[in-house]
Length: 300
Image (tube, rainbow, N blue to C red; front, side, top):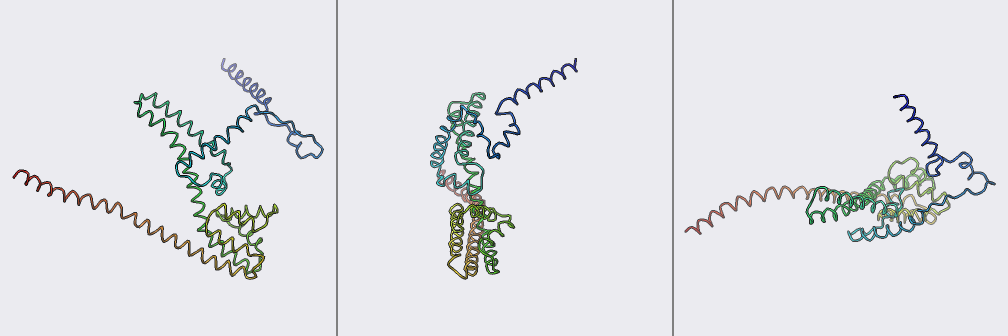
């Protein structure tokens, strides 16, 4: 009996596999279909019409616009597309906003089901139903903002070293394109990854100055703007290496000043719990004799 059950299961599995292979969404394309785009005389492949595609194309901009308006209500001023391009995310702005709304909808459904299952009062149910989707939306928005800020900080801290390397390579006789390409290929940090994208744009026919300005506008760091402005003088200045070295020293001073501010800010934050821990016992010690004195005057 067990052998018959195993045999029936294998036959069912084989039949379901054959049935799903006939469906275009699940089936693997044949070898001729995969090689057709690379054949010069082959006809155009047949396009499969998805009935849901027009609805998706219509809903995506609406969802993205609604999510962007909601994010602006919570004080998010920078566009999601700029932040996604900054961290080299494969998602587009519409896809990210759609994901936010999907997580918010799932949180709303879970909050509603939990409120009904636990039998919460009406006020608490309203709080859960309103707070769960908002919290899910803000968590995803905060993760994107944190990743964007972290990328900017890493670029700022790597920039002095990168600028010094560019200055040394220029002084050694390398061209600007060869210097950027060498740093991009041998580096492992955020600046190296950004420079690899800059080099890809240059290979596609974009001018070096234009590609560097686009990088500066994407990163949105003042130190990068100044360095790109100096590198844009490649065709005009004969001592570009010395100018880049001067800018590298300025970048290092900016990083040092920002690090000093961060250390001082954290030093001030250390004294907050110490002050609170000192004031609370002091207030209690002062309040006890004060209340005793009030009782003495009231009894007399």
